[in-house]
Image 1 (cartoon, one colour):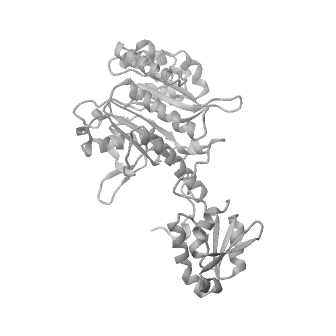
Image 2: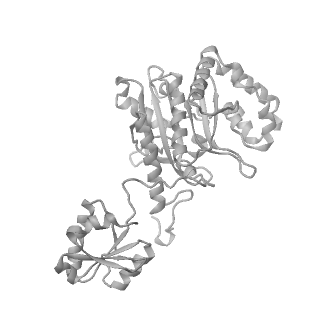
Image 3: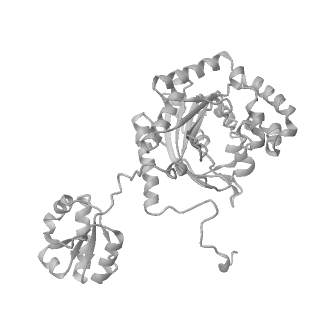
Length: 429
């Protein structure tokens, strides 16, 4: 049992509370992203935060950092092995089969958002509990769906106030051509094994594609000369990649081919991409979103046949921490422009009825109904910077009126309850 004196009244490392304005910023961003997705025909999905631990082992890859270092796993009292979801694609693929979505007209296009968890090293824009918005298109291998997902990610970030984006794209081939390139990559790095970092020596044994993800300065000259996957693509993969690029060009989306972009999860194939803030003289580029095609994930989860699919995820934490990002307030939450003050027992009893009148008129109010003093309530109103105060006292209860005061000019009007909603709507906030 944990002793009371050992309780820490703080969030776990790498996690945080979202309160007030910060919560609304996340809600507003997710509303905007959802709106874009809905107009393109996507439907919402929400999966549990806890999933079977084996679901991720068999899909993401046992030798990835997510599984080896970052997965939050637990054993229930009943003996089940569960894990906090580290990403969204695998649970959605599980839901696709569990609910028989393969029997519906294909492709199935889904969007989602919420918290995900990785035991990562917390740093700027990176948390152990992080929030993402994601898109998945399941049941189509057409190149247009790759371009569609990239287009939506670009559109969402642009409408969030970030028009200057760098889009990097690559093809990592399929199971016909990638093994040849992988073998050449391993042979090349083995020749330089003494010159690479310790992490890369481990990757060379367990997950060679992750060698190209290395950010250690020591490995950069070696990585720059590594065999390019583009040179080893088979004809179908080359054609698919060519069509994706043609679609992006037709939509006037600027991109750069990055031969070192691999996104080292086991289930990726063919198209992979990242969307970043461009690097500057003082700041390196910061990845905001990424994704790719995962045609082999269904088989990894026990599916009887391959299911072509493509998706992407946007890191909401990084987006909302970016200077210049739009303040996207949620539509269902309006900042109150009137603070409701009540004086006396009769006014307090009538208060909820007055608030209900305004709710029906879609006028939000702030209040402190637990307070009694006029000066206390006025003081709270001033601290909130709400422009108007609405005062209901004993006389106003009898007359069926309220006093509406402009907190900036101190001018005030007496308004009947019947006219209150129209009067408040006419005020400039």
